[in-house]
Each structure stands twice: as C-alpha cells, then as structure tokens.
Length: 162
Image 1 (cartoon, rainbow, N blue to C red):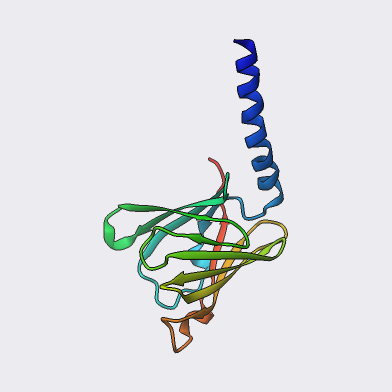
Image 2: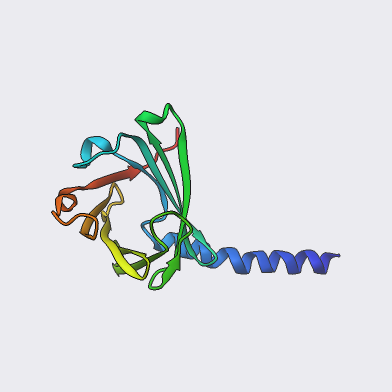
C-alpha cells in the first residue's frame, strides 16, 4: 500500500511541478479584471465587468473568461479558452474554430483567431514588466474594414484578493 501511495504521489508531482514552473515563468498566468476607466472601447457592447483567469494546464494554458453585460441583469457568461504557445489550438466557442498564440518575447504575445480556415483577427497582448497591467489591442480584424477597432485598448489589472 505504501508503494502505491508513493507511486501516486510521485506521478502527481511529475505532472504538477512542470505546471508550477511554467506558471512562475509566464507573466500572463493569473487573474485579470478589465479596467473600464483605463480602456478605450469604440463599440462597447455594454460590458459591466470582465475577468480572465489564465491557469497552466497539461496542454498549455486554460483561460476562464467571465463576462457580465449591463443588459443581462447580472447574468454572467463563463467560457473557457485553451491554448498552447506556437500551435493552433482548436476552439469550441462560436465564431472561431482555432486560436494561435505566439510569444514575441517574455511579456508580449500575438493572438490570431481562425475561422473556416481564414484569419479573422489578430491581437497584441502585452503584460507590463511590473505586472500591473495587461493590454489587448487589435492589429487586424476581417470584420472591421474601417479599422475603427485599431484604436481600442482593453486594459486589465491583476485581481487582488479581499
């Protein structure tokens, strides 16, 4: 019995230690809350609050997004977005069927949304070196021929406990 317990503990550590190391090296990992006052959103769909939780997973990173819209009377939408750096990750959500996330450096990543075999949009995501903010901005969007989204900045701040 002791051998089985030790074996299971060893297997658990084998899985968890690399994830812990990955989390420590990845400034994106953590909980982030949209700061509406610091953001610029041209066509705001009535966002009341939005939060991302980036967590290491066995296949890369899993984002849990919680969105609350003013028109939905307190109802929160929760979705999950998996990704692995450097490869297209299939997505189950509506609108896109793949997400490619590529790190340019330790604090900058480019997200490319793919649908029907075509690139739908690309965003730059930057975490400040002091981890006080994470900023998303569109670089390109197929559904925005005027380029109005390019001035948008979605600024997220770390969620503090308490």
